[in-house]
Length: 412
Ligand SMILES: Cc1cc2nc3c(=O)[nH]c(=O)nc-3n(C[C@H](O)[C@H](O)[C@H](O)COP(=O)(O)OP(=O)(O)OC[C@H]3O[C@@H](n4cnc5c(N)ncnc54)[C@H](O)[C@@H]3O)c2cc1C
Image (cartoon, rainbow, N blue to C red; front, side):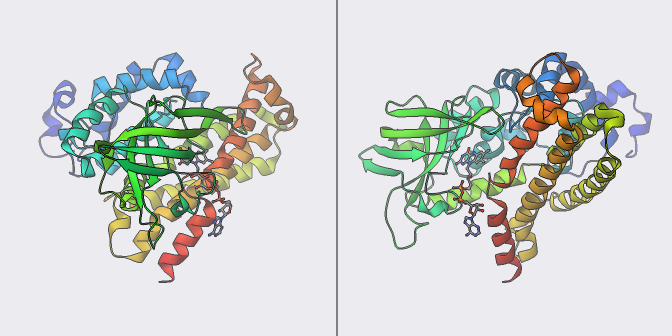
């Protein structure tokens, strides 16, 4: 505790503002006490249940909206944004601790593309008009944003984007399609990269646009996931009008903008916490299976817990600046890919073990998902999560792509 704090009463300590942005966390216990007190009050049983029942990358959307509203009123909805923009201004360490407490308390997982990626990008690269229009709506949860990057022939090879935007006076006309768009059916806005020119290098000639999902000519079709959930979609553009003022960065330089967005999104993520959530669930599934669990399952669980500990250390080392990839050091630049690769594969092995622990019940369980049979329900959730987390080594860059990037950096 820093000098002087020892003499203060707890209410006095509580009344003091939390650590200002950018400073080291002076008193972790005080911060954690404040977070725990808030979560105990704000996380009602129905929200915790929604958090527990999360299968994919976000929780039930209504629970997300309620949870977003509570975090917003508390001033904690955007932990990484500077206070001047309505964020909490927390350090990376504070964000990690907060996320960890949220996991321990089964908080819903937010649908947070606006908070994690587009908001920080707008703060850095948006015009004053874009910042004024979009940032408050992201914080309040009035605007939900989906990401329109991938196309049927442009996934790992993103530079192959073919959706065209033609400039016509003060707007673009967009034609083409996007695929695997998570949450497009919940979103009222999309950030997208589209082709505005065919230039020598394919990365040139792309432009970053903000598109209203209710624009005439835009349609969304669901794609059912392996776990049975409707999370992603195909999105079609048929002469969709997008005002030029909705462009971020210069025309034909959308690649630079998209790269910056990805790097900000990674810096705002704490994947070790997500993996910890999976380990917690696996432990519960193994406990629920009781004596029926083979001894090797418990041994493997212990091994995975040790791996998670190492992964968490790696993340905490990489977090302090949140900008490791910006430094000149090739090892530091490879770190985000290492984190994605190790995190997603560890997550998958944990989910697989949880399903294995359910034994034969796992095979039958999908059919009874949602029924009031506690043991089968645990098995059903473990099975559905195993299927769902297969996607972790595909989205945000496949494992093969990450290995290529790591090799590219380290062998330079
Ligand atoms: C759950 C989920 C959510 C998603 N959400 C979104 C979203 O919201 N918005 C969005 O824009 N996209 C989203 N995506 C799409 C995701 O970004 C792409 O699936 C991913 O980039 C891979 O592209 P692809 O599916 O076209 O596979 P491909 O690029 O066709 O790859 C197929 C296989 O080939 C391998 N491969 C490809 N190129 C190479 C290479 N050079 N070297 C070695 N191996 C290679 C890949 O690793 C993969 O195993 C999501 C995907 C998933 C699974």
